[in-house]
Image (cartoon, rainbow, N blue to C red; front, side, top):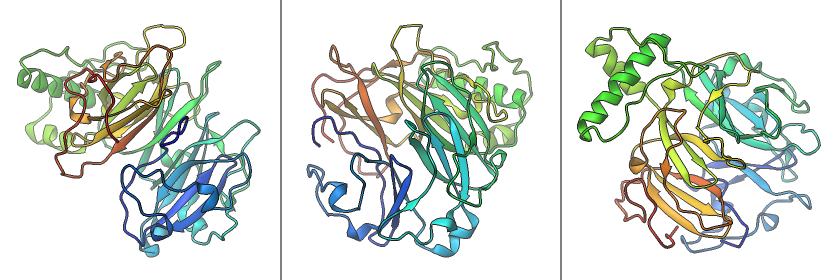
Amino acid sequence: MKDEDAIVGVFSASTHTPVLFFATNGKAYKLKTWRLPLGNPQSRGKAFVNLLPIEPGDSIMNVLPLPEDEAEWGNLDIMFATRSGDVRRNKLSDFATVNRAGKIAMKLEDGDHMVGVALCTAEDDVMLTTALGRAIRFKADDVRVFKGRDSTGVRGVRLQKDDAVISMAVLGRVDATPDERAAYVKHASAVRRAADGAEDEPVVAADDEGEETAGEAILSTERIAQLGAAEQFILTVTETGFGKRSSAYEYRRTGRGGQGLTAHGLGGRAGTRLAASFPVEDGDELLLVTSGGQMIRTPVGQVRIVGRSSQGVTIFRTAEGERVVSVERLPDSGGGEDVDAVGGEAADGEGEA
């Protein structure tokens, strides 16, 4: 990877998987995977300017693999999110045809750019996370389906001064009351503490003001199993290398357009910002890259599960003057490869991608 470059997407695909590429100017391009250069993990690849007619000054910000069977596209929507907090929903079928010159995906205001693109259905939830550690979760169908592609969308989150959206995630919608979610989070935390010898602090569900919820719902064994099967975890990583996992049940669903709730405690340290936030699974790995070109690969399962307002633990020791600029999820491949970080602390030295 070249200096000052950063990874914007990692995914597995067959040679016939269609892939949409979204540029900073809001344009979309489409290629089949077989048209991309084949290389090895150490290859630098080929510049996109040699693959797509990207306009001068633009770069690829988002990559989205699509279902190979276009018959499935009619049941799917595509959700966009911008740095300034706008969101928009279109039918995926709007992108069935994209010519070589590309197609405008979303109109952007000057200085704005897309930070997230994802497939969704009306039954999903959408979560936006900001650099100052806020997150808002709302129903995907709170955003109407736009017929055209030349509008800026609607407000997804109201940002504070100097804040910006860094990520968008699509989450499964779970039918559970706030008390059920709080009781489950408390139960799951107790189970983990018992398994780990009670070394971790208990996870306590909190409402949007940071006050503890009652969490007094009585959950049956069957209900606990149902909530456990549907539980998702959100990983957050700061620019200074702190990271954590927290249950998606802690992120209460609200209407779009608010300021959201705390997604990561930044400790009040001036200049500390979030670098990444996205759903992960226990068998995944993370690939982190710093502004100085250091790279490390570490298992998600070794990142501690704590409350969403926690500061987390050190998963990557950044050198003085460096910051984390890229964090990508490497889905579980079942390969059992060695990694470079253990426990909550990053290993010394540089890992391999």
